[in-house]
Length: 289
Image (cartoon, rainbow, N blue to C red; front, side, top):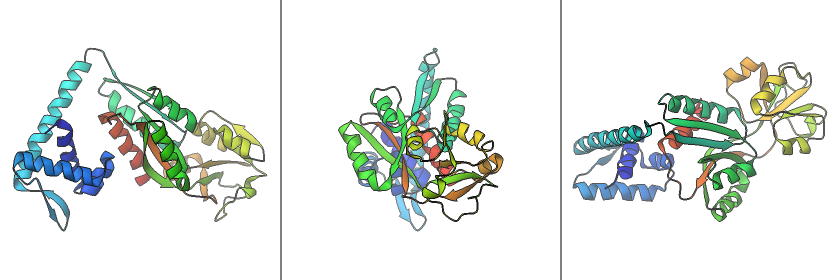
């Protein structure tokens, strides 16, 4: 029995599902089921039982999980004590610029910095740089996107580089436009329809691919701030939440194209920390809103 396995059991209790807990923990369902079985064998009790509402703790299981929760809390407190000497833990993330990345990182950093034990940094860069920063241990996590149809190829590339990648979300690109833009009422927009308009982007590769005029800016947030000042401007983006779109005075129109996925990547031997898991959950929440 070890602390990590206790955390796994607490995650099962939290989600009420082996499948969901395994997904949150980035591990296979059979492996998690084996850990729970081993815990039950070691303790001599049945921790969980299956019901029509999902997996729930037994009476003995509730007592066990209560003690496990206390042990995990004490372990976290002990770790914090040693970080109180002025040595801050590092939480660095590299990712391709997007509103959801910035929002998830901001929420995570806000929670971590409140403890005054973390040094947090977000580096916005292109996909190749994301992988390089993770491989060189400059960042513990990377966030990048790829076509869903290319997922098998990119995962193979990760393995060759001693990296691992997990899907965080799926999406299709949208075009952000001012409400009075000529294309703002289109049901779907193709790349050809955009050639005569000005692209705002922070991605040099997207700039090079666009046949019309283009304005290259430092980040996605800079692009959306400038969008209202460019008469015929547009921006290609992941879907953004309705509140952000309203505040920026823009509308979202579907862009013709393939489905994309967001991936979180980390080194194969990297054990996800509390900060990592907090960020991953915050990123997922941005898509659940």
